[in-house]
Image (cartoon, rainbow, N blue to C red; front, side, top):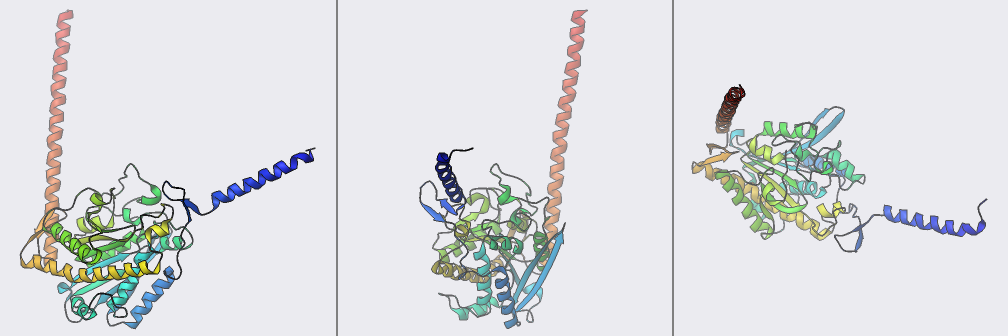
Length: 432
């Protein structure tokens, strides 16, 4: 039998053990290398809509403006996993111009679940386009003329299943509902892993386009055939053009056009504080299988961008919501206003720059292939035909190089065999 005198010792031992376990489970984080502690930031309910609320708000907006907005729901699934994506089309010129004369812009928000601010921007921007909200510092009367020449498709929440996981408490989740990063699931340089590869952050899936969300976005792109593509993210302030999978930008006039647009946006709306350039060259790591690289290299969208609209560098790497989303009202409103202005300018300057390229008869480099600068209507088909011919020539050159290399190797092996035979014969003569 245990002595009663030992009970106080065990009482205090288990008491302190319980305190220690509670400490380990508590949401306290150390910031950087200092000893300051702060709690993990939760979603501010007064600033952010839930995913269901946000999509209902957008549906209501469409219902109030059926003359300029249209809504469709696209579903896909495989291997027991299903996804649903809402697509909003803004079109004021449908009855006045044929499709071949419209400048088409495709925008995607919410590709990563934890980046809630991006879908809030989608709602805000649609409210501005319909006139329900104004943009501080911009003459709203001038917006009408800008929007007369564009058709805009908006995907407000590309990764709804991943967003649901964030709302249930997994605030660092960026992947979709079955753990795949949708911005690594596209076919350009798919599946390549860097030395610091983290499957929680960058799982590319079992194959390119294995995920229903990526399949839906690819089909939207094929059917819409946009001139301008923008995918909207958060984590830093940046304006990126291709490429993400290597340190470099495309060659030719198109690259200069994209760089010029981004530099102007950065100067006019962000006081030159955004990082501008290629994702692979500026962000500090290479990303393989990204949407924007596919849009430029395969879908041949001549102007392809990634916008990073917010980031808190002071946040702990574990405090994901604070790192990727503003948490105070002033910053929240500033981000929505400034980036709405930037998008309105893009709707104006993007098509204008493309028109200038057409009028000047510029030859534009698309994905490394030199093609004619005409970018709308029938001419876009000939552009893709030329891309295909050039791709075929590239494959022939590759096969020719492989043939030469094989010939050299075979010649080396043949010469080595002859030399070895002569050496054996010489040794045999000496021994005999």
